[in-house]
Image (tube, rainbow, N blue to C red):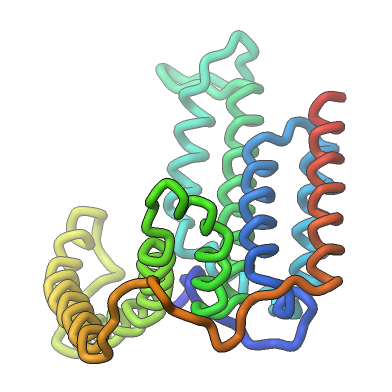
Length: 266
């Protein structure tokens, strides 16, 4: 399950989505997440599904590679479905037993929340799978540049987010190594009840935190050795510039948002 996490990883491929400006992908991801949590009805769901499927197809990222990232939130999806299914109050009761009851609104809410979680993971994974950490940092810094007028440390914020994303696959690999080492010594992370499995995670978390702090300290020393002093006066070897495909992508995103708004009102 540790290796199933796809957020923060990059999948190299030659596609139009990979070649888009990172600012377009940041804006598109934000817009997509807004529509995911605001759609109403079957028509809106179909439009969002078709839009996501089309972008995944254009990205040339294998669908199976993206879907495996959903395994990491399987428990969260089950808990979300359970609470929405059995604890949504409504007079339209479909099934009832003692204090448990399932209503029509509960079924609808559970399905919506599961779909939103799935689209949330797929949408954010698609952005990181098609954008390198350096491109993501440059795009975020460029997009937030107007905030410098009110003394917001835009470069530092973008740098912190990029480092956090870059550390995700590193920590995943480190976790996998520690788990294999602990299992070779007799640790069991898969059997037993929930409490027993939680206790088995303690020998895993301690060395993982130590490794994370050590990597963070090494990174800080490396940045200081290279005289890193923030974003003041820094230049880019490859500055971001919009191309025709980026303007076309913005137009498609605006039309998509307009269609979702129209379907919501209908």
